[in-house]
Image 1 (cartoon, helix red, strand yellow):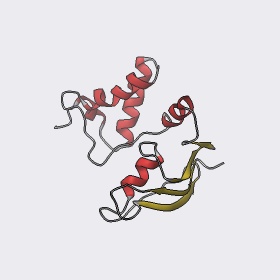
Image 2: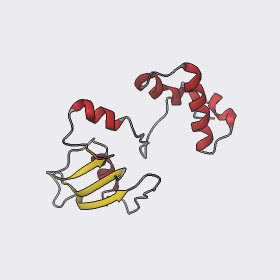
Image 3: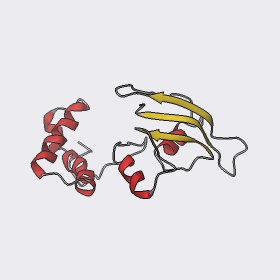
Length: 142
């Protein structure tokens, strides 16, 4: 089973003369990494927003671990969406919170884990992006 299976995905906006994304297909298996590259306005963001459920496609399917995102009921869609994280190009952090506090926000909103485990996960995430351990106590502007 593929981790991500996108087949014939198409998205068009009513005010556009041509599709933003047309007939895109690819598969990713566990551990594979995909990079989308292209110039401004070529559909990269539209493709990603459609793949994660923020935009409804005009055609095609998006399956995550064998479950079709667009034909799933609301509960199943929520389960699927909890399996990924997205950082948008112009994403923002809360400037009044430290880096660690910013990372803690989605944990507190979406999962029920002990506070100590969340703290451990925050330290792991800080390490995963190559920041030093003390980065968690700093503010985004520092």
